[in-house]
Amino acid sequence: MSGVRVRVPASTANLGSGFDALGMALGRHDEVVVRPALATAVHVTGEGAGEVALDERHLVLRALRAAAAKLGTDPGPVELICANTIPHARGLGSSAAAIVAGIAAAYGLAGKRLDEDALHLAAEFEGHADNVAASLLGGLVVAWHDDGGFRAARLEPHPDLRVTAIVPAERSDTHVTRGLLPETVPHADAAFAAGRAALAVHALTAAPELLLAATADRLHQDYRESAYPATLRLVRELRALGVAAVVSGAGPTVLALSTEQDLPDGLDLRGFTAWPLDVDRSGVVVEGA
Ligand SMILES: Nc1ncnc2c1ncn2[C@@H]1O[C@H](COP(=O)(O)OP(=O)(O)OP(=O)(O)O)[C@@H](O)[C@H]1O
Ligand SMILES: N[C@@H](CCO)C(=O)O
Image 1: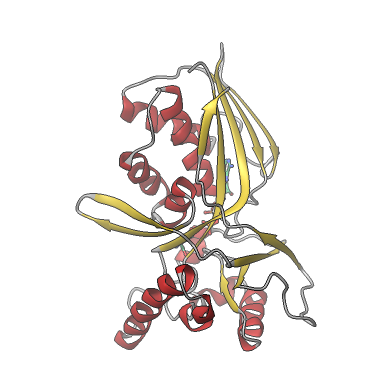
Image 2: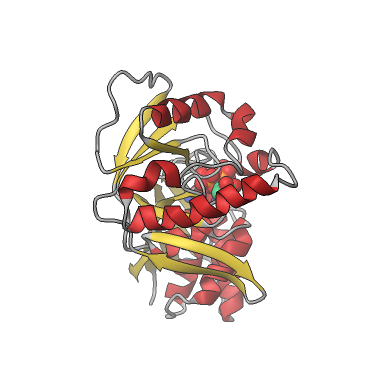
């Protein structure tokens, strides 16, 4: 293949109770075209334009080079054209999507199908597998880590599931908000989390009427409140109204999960923009360019 075009979905991680384990792909995408060139050049439009490095430090390019090295190939100088719609540092998996795009491009240029090693490499880059697995596989994913590395199982989200991302203008850095988490949690909270995460798999795939109970969290959201108090206020307000609202990934976006598309009337959404989103069921797509 002389060049590749990669379309990669956004993702939401945790889904409330499934910290670092549950992820779901969302219908908002970045598109990346990679072609051999005489000298490496990076072009970015949309989200991140004017902000990200336009050289070998670019995250898509770093992931592409790392994957090519693992595959024993060398794409050499490339032209990288990124058209981004996934907002950065909002909890919608932009860094995971960039990493998956780079890895998928390297596989495409090498004429190889994506495999389990691609997931492992993507998760090593990101530090956890929930977002990258969702961007790779689409749908709902359960991710874990064992001696064999990072793994993920893909599940089909319930067809009636509706998602609204309520996105603030402010950003938050995942490294910073991971630093707000405690080293240990009470046993009762760990037991609560195990039960609700298991219930979340059932609710998201088969029983959406259980979403409110299933998405209750005790492991991460409250600990991160100082980074985005308005987000936690909105999550609590929506949950009090019966909507299964959670912090999306490491925040600060609020994700409302429901079988209704509309949010309740009378919410104060100043400072936020509400985006109704589809669930992406395909995952990353690679084609010739
Ligand atoms: N398409 C991209 N191209 C280049 N760099 C990117 C791209 N997307 C994200 N990044 C880098 O990743 C950073 C955002 O990563 P971070 O993990 O903090 O947020 P996120 O991935 O959007 O949210 P979350 O991991 O909570 O879902 C950006 O500031 C930028 O440096
Ligand atoms: N599970 C991760 C998702 C963010 O990338 C977290 O909450 O830190």
